[in-house]
Length: 441
Image 1 (cartoon, helix red, strand yellow):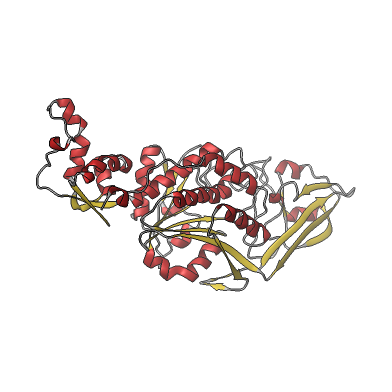
Image 2: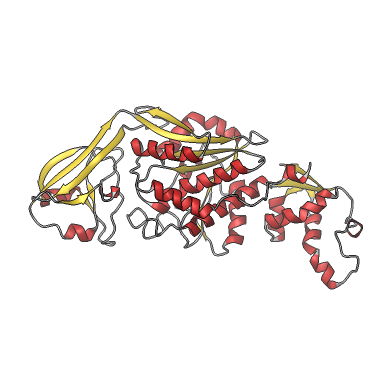
């Protein structure tokens, strides 16, 4: 096999990833998304402008999916709380987090004492609007900053939620990028949260950038399946339709969320903890940020819960920046585009890209000669033996010494304490000179 047939294309990425992701997030941020409804369709339609081949699917309300049922579709047009003079003091048009997600319609006058039963705020974060939902129980409510709630005066208030809950469809989208094999890498992100930047939009915009990068490559070994779904119910629905195929084809994958700030890198393993995805993620993160935060399966909270569930057992791990639930702005209006930056998004993209490259480049290596090869006659070893010359090629010799046809490149890299990316470059002349044979795992 030629080097170009074995290893992923290392040419520079042809677009400014950080700026692309941040600009895309700016466009999508105002859209009111939920499990279903116009906001999801608008978001998927816009992503489709950047991803040729993205296919949007519909699943009718009431459709069973394992132990779940697809809920009714929610549409919201307007919502507000107005005082007796008609002034809007809480306004959905000012921020879409002001409405409890999936609120049923209401048009009433209430005394403050009764209204308080439908208000949600955070005393510990008095300037933040909380993100609250009620997908599977009918209720209505408003979310507001606690400082604003405390300023409400006794009296009557006009509460209006112009929404609709009725049978409709749940939408999700997938993009299949065929590779040289039918074995797949699964990338999944969610598109069901309203205006929050790290917890929501960082995932789909980075997934879009990864898809565009993969589409720009001359070739890749694995087929890539990239999903844009509503969290939880979306992954459950997708698995209910595709589980047996995924179990027989997916060899690695990542749940993509909370990937856009600059504070830290984080890792959450698959339930099994020793998959190719886990090993590739841990490998790249220790070189990107030796102080990355490592969580356990007990810290799970996103769609890895479904992909790694008993009986499903897909090899899905999660690389993040600040993990969901671990940063103060999480699930509030403070999770905005000041927290998520072009630099942070680029860092998240880079970690996932390197993990994908590690998976793609994880081949078996075998020497073609017995004992150490004579590197000098091939121009690969200094002809004058000194302490310095030995040190220069030590990594090359250590690499060759482990090329027994039984170890993968990732295994050898971890043994040597070297990044896979460095060993790929060392392998180039060894393969070109016929000293190393490479084969896919």
